[in-house]
Length: 81
Length: 81
Length: 157
Length: 157
Image 1 (spheres, one colour):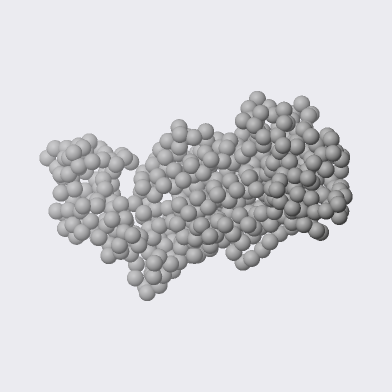
Image 2 (cartoon, each protein chain N blue to C red; image 1 turned 90 degrees about the vertical axis):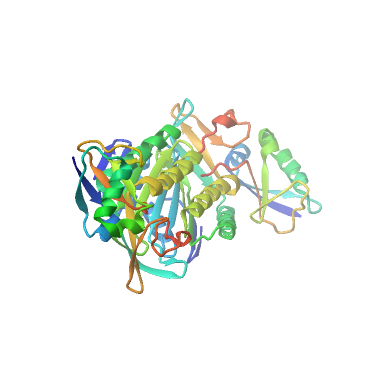
């Protein structure tokens, strides 16, 4: 399966792109997804412990599975307001 | 001595005037002043326990003395805001 | 009646309060947070319906007490700008009787100072409101007084 | 990006926020209290001087999370009207990046709800700010991230 990813803020700057696509044999967990993302963009390592993942506008945890056709986003801790 | 008094809100309505003048042989305490005021306006009795007194823009207590040439005001508990 | 320093605006007014002017006054590059509070005329108090409120003040003392409260707040919090504006006269439903504005570097202080300013104003500043009920009667609101209105039902914002 | 019901206004905007429009939206005869909070661009963070902030959002999720926070607040307090407006793009000193507005019958609830709304917004809503320091460098503000900026000195309103 293919997972489309949106990147924001410093994650986007470090990766040099605001979106990417990752391939998996089956639905990955969030932890597996993060591992694949930082393999594709080693420069994200500096953020890795802080990277947050959202699926369909909700925060998800390392053990959660990423469903088919999800909108996945990855970004550092928020700093709005 | 003569003490000029300003009245506000329900105290003014009950007394039928927004100011009055009271005569004392010597500087009265606030308690003596309140007693003289309610003797002049018995209709203030309904408020007597609640009546507040201010001298020169500050709240005063029953035991305080009213100085010469003070601006004295008498009114019910405040309800602004 | 007003008291004005570059960082403190205290005033009694008899016209509608322009909140945007208060907001502009308290906003400054030295603050990261602004809190504005408006006390507004609420229609229902329990089961009783209001059509308007009349506010009366003892002007000199009201301004002096608002100034005193603002000074106390400035000792407690790192306030950059503060405004306390109270209106008098007849107010229709939803109009603002009081506007408090305060700015501080961080937001917790603005909320704490804003709450302190309005809480103290309601306890100390000599202003009184009179209800004009829909049945045509009027009634001074005097917390704790023998007004026929239980204290627990006293209109308050 | 916006979400609008008659009593709830949630929006991301890329232009200056008109606070008076927010104030008019939340003011209602069913409330006696209105609290408005503005997060504004502060010049100094410790010893460091800012010239501007750039705000970026993940728009769909930001609006969804602001809506979620407003709904939670409406369960906790008797909120009559609520508004959460966040701005994106470049902001100059003293401009408002966020405006929160809330009205309730009594004032304690407006202060508590206003503080909850901005506290939760800053934790949950996917918006990020980038500092433009006076020395020409830029820096994303990421609480807890390895940004070279101690967390205790992170700009916050």
